[in-house]
Amino acid sequence: MGNGVGKLDRCFAGDVSGRHHNISDPLDEGLGHSFCYIHPDSSKAYSDEFSVPFRMISGASISANTFTPLTTTLIDPFSTCTNSGSLDKASSFESSHSFASVPLQPVPGKSGPIDGGFLSGPIERSSILSLERNHGDDQLSKRGCKFHKCCLISKSLKKAMLKSNLKLSRGKKVICWPDGNSNETVMDASVGDHDEGGEEFSENRKVEWAQGKAGEDRVHVVVSEEHGWVFVGIYDGFNGPDATDFLLSNLYSNVYKELKGLLWNDKPGSAADGAPNGSVKHSDVLKALSEALRKAEESFLEITDTMVTDNPELALMGSCVLVMLMKGDDVYLMNVGDSRAVLAQKQPHLERIVEEDSNDGENNKIGAFNRVSSLAASQLTFDHCTSVQEEVERIKSEHMDDSSAIMKNRVKGSLKVTRAFGAGFLKQPKWNNALLEMFRIDYVGNSPYLNCSPCLGHHRLGPKDKFLILSSDGLYQYFTNEEAVAEVEVFNFLFPEGDPAQHLVEEVLIRAAEKAGLKFHELLNIPQGERRKYHDDVSVVIISFEGRVWRSSL
Image (spheres, helix red, strand yellow):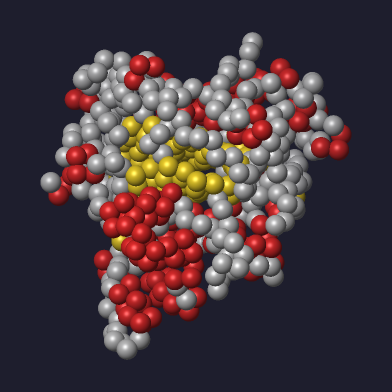
């Protein structure tokens, strides 16, 4: 029995003749990275039968944890296209050619009046380069200060705009319920329950892909422009990298296989198997996602079982899982742990008009922003952690003979998450017993303290939906859902050609530094590992729907 993993395939999408193997130069600067995918020809795609459901994907990650080598002999998914000197970095990124990316580079400490921030991300840089080509160096020099965007906004202006926005922003309570056939949680976040034809995933069609790591976080993005689907996986690991690297190398492949006959078919042009007129039941897609995750964990725990004698630390390693699959206007979500998907939606009844003072430039900007609808934050996933009383009560009821099932606000005093991929020491006594004594818990009985039962959800995109934030929980150490949405809304208003995901990561560091009484650069000068005391690894992917041509309006 092998581990079933070699190197990470380029796209797991069938016949290699339809794949792109053009890979970006490796970006392995250790701190983090920012990347983007912008639809190349929106006018053409929106008129096609298979239209992409987004305008732009913006992503960024920052590492707080230091580099940790794999325990097992599994080949590092980042070793394929990186030089040998880069493998000991805490952060790296690679992709097919349609993604643009840059390593996070702090603005030089004395380059401006405001301490903090990174140089521009790939979206902003491409905009500046385009301007240079079209208008020459004079126009570029006028825009050069965008590389130090923090200098363009006074703190008072930004705070005023955020305060105004947050006052009127209201979130939607997430509704989850248990699936009667399993321990899974199913969530309904749909605007309307519309079943629409699911065009097939063709094995011979081109896909674009990107994958990144930052500390113990892993991000995986796969896009098919031609058939209008997107896969995003964010894996927030703990106690080592093996679980997250296994997910990165295997979960998308499993999802692709499980969706065969649902969202794609071997025969191009044919309807999905088992679905009349090509229609797809959302519940079937969600079950396919769940089954893909179940098989992935089963394989990982089999490896753990085989290698735990020589590598007992494998029993400690685990990961939170957040998966989003977007097909047309349908968004399918699966999460285990405390990573989140938060949707920003326009609220027409919250539109505001504020009197503007023509003699006050800042008030002019605030007034202009206040004419934009405030966006509400709707969490489309459910947190599985000890801060959720429902989860705490569930574990206590499953372990009534163990008064220490929840201790120090952690499961058995070890983990704050109540569901996770891997972490075998909290699932079976044999894996706990394999650990060194100092790492063992007092395992009472045989029932698992932790499970990998996901929260599953479907959402139908509509004209009110503006963008979707997918992130590991490190973002919400310093942001509420509403604050994250408001921050992106303000940023997009002020910098429509900027990188919103990078901005959120930057703001996490600014807030972490302020909380610790440090300057931005002082925080970044703290070595990785030690810097974990101030912030977690953070991975953010933002999918923008602005400019989407909705089918209902055609």
